[in-house]
Length: 151
Image 1 (cartoon, rainbow, N blue to C red):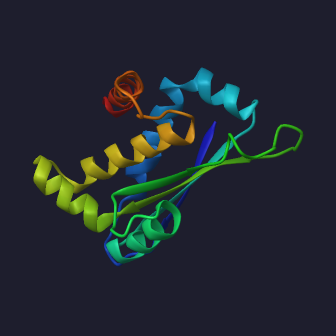
Image 2 (cartoon, rainbow, N blue to C red):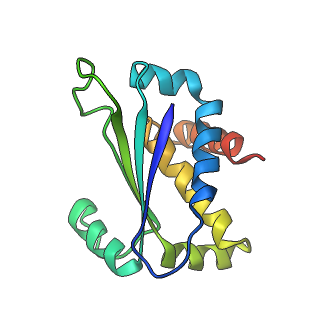
C-alpha cells in the first residue's frame, strides 16, 4: 500500500484529495510492481507543493540547472537498505512547483489541477524505477501514466 504525506508551502490553495485519488489509482494499476519493490511494507510518498523560487534553488543544488522546473522527485527504493528493517518505507519525495504548473496548464489548455496530477503521476513513476532516457523507456512510462490518469 502507498501512503501520502502532503505539505503545501505556498499560499495557493491546493486540494490534497486530488493526489490521494491518484496515489490510490497508481497503486491499483501497478500493485504487483509496487508490492515487489516494497517487500510487502507500506510505502510513504512525501509530496511538497512549492513556488518557483524554492524550485529554482532545488534545481540548482541537486541538478546543477540554474532555473526552476515543474517537478523534482527523489527516489529512495534503489539506494536505501531497508529490506531487513520493519515498518513503513519512504519510497520518495516529490516537489511540484505550483507556479510552473500554472504556466504549463495554460500552455496545454487544461486546468492547473490536471497539470498537477500529470506531474505527480510522472514523479511517482520515477520513484518506482521508471525513466525516459530513450524512446522505449519514454513510451513505457507514458503508457503507465495514461493508465493511472484514466478516470
